[in-house]
Length: 495
Image 1: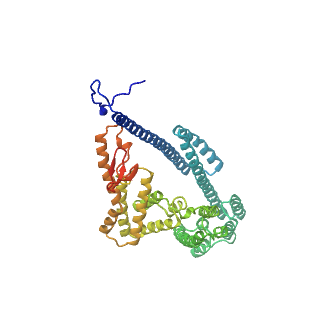
Image 2: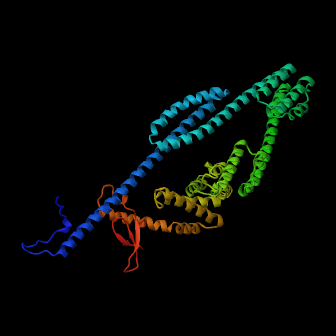
Image 3: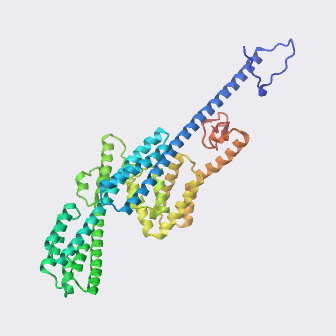
């Protein structure tokens, strides 16, 4: 039978030879040894569980790190490609796509070297698929714009030459080719050609400044008007003056049209939003709006996600807000408003921001742009909240991010409901908002200090046992009625 190792804290009393040891004392000693062994097993189990939890956290941190690093690398490298495409101004989409695919192979080699965790790769693949679609669509639109601009420039030069040569067939051929290529739609092309033929066939009194402008100002766009003006063989001074007039005229028309379109879009959004809320929104409402195709797709997505959730008996995602997502967007709006657009806020609609919070943040963003006094007050308050977050008041895990986001939401509500609040009022409110977290934070620092002083475990006992206020289990003292908490090493009264 193996010997039981001697325990320093359990020294046996010396027993004289021939002295009888009572069964009661043996039972007590055996019980003491058993209790000690049980305690050792419990502590060992707690440490093992803590070790497993710690390893899981390391794995999660590694997955997050690999995902973020690969995502950042991919976006950074594609940004360099975007800059190159802007400079190259290529007009052939097949050529641009081929170059981009080749370029992406080099980026994939870099991200493959980073992604070792399967879950990190899985998350990155989802991101990459969505990002590639967005990037390729933007590249196509840019390439097509370059092509249209090149065709229009060539057409303008051809028509200018046709006017100078008084050659109507040259003008017709140039415009028909431009329409066929898609640079002009049929209506705009026909109007363009008609004005060119007026200048060629009917002629313009080159000595009559007003006659030239009368024809030019009816052109469908500035390029056509300028072509007519330059083809009229005016004096250098007259041509310069009319070109300046043409520029002002068409800029004014463009600004007016843009304003009217934006007003119409805002009206459409205002009409669509109530229907989205009550579930009465139908595809025809979106199709007939004046929103851009990109935004129409966004509205279709919102409608679809809401309808699917309702049909499946699930919670409508458009009514849900993730506090961490809210906190980050609120921080950007209040501290860095110049980096945010309205579209950035609504891009998170149903993906962390509810409809009402999107509206609230949009209003806050607009207020920051228009009301500098209010904007500065909000900026100071959110800067203070950010500094508390940086100091670790809310902790460092995912739950802490959610807690901080809730505080940011509450702060926004206070600022919205108290637009005339003084700096002192805001400071007082902010102190009350985070008083509990501050108390736990500083209490935890002192508690961790004493634990590290008492227990010299590798890495610090505070990495294994929770800080004060985060008890593994609680109970009530049957004698005193006090609430007790087990903090990993001892029972203590909870204040």
